[in-house]
Length: 302
Image (cartoon, rainbow, N blue to C red; front, side, top):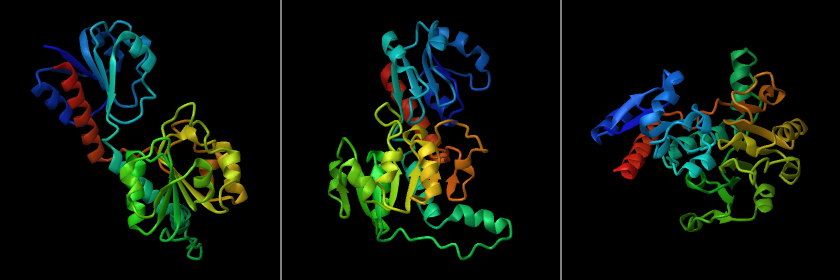
């Protein structure tokens, strides 16, 4: 019976789905010291973000055919090494789409209404009632990256009365048909928006795409939300923009270095809302990711 290794904690449905397809399933999520040795006769490996999949882990896995990443990002997998070995890599970008889009919308509203400082101030007994926010209705949202998550966010925000302008190297025909949606170039998007939300992977081309120069071209008082990858924003430049008032509010779910250092000035700033990379942390997304990646592995191996 062909063996599949689960290296990280997955939704409980994973073992049953794979067993029903005729595979032997070994859960190593709580015993990672033995993961390398268990991989010697495995045909598949499933991970989330915690396990670093590199040559050191895989050098004895001569039977390995496929690696499944239950989630979107592939930062923790050495793709070039896998390609050199002929090991296929699959993920589940469609799994957490709704969960991440909903969190992004929640953070847009939270930043607009200054809920971070309102929450802290109320708990401290300060009663910060006069700290006025703004509505989303009638405002322009700039979306950087209009794939599955960015596209879903666009639909949510248009339904709330926003205009959406987007930048992407690939244009989605379905989105182009929407009222109050338009593709523009990068500079037009960042300079024409009251809100900006990022939905791009972390690549050499996207590293620090929001930097000091980009912030200088934005509207005064712009609000920034990032539920994509931390490295796409230059966090030092972002702090400068927040302190100067160019950026009036920020909501971050991702950071250049995680877990984040809570003593950092950016994290402690009252106009910055922070969450601990929870975009896909819903029961629904966990199940979706697990089911999708298991089905892709089964289809490949059978």
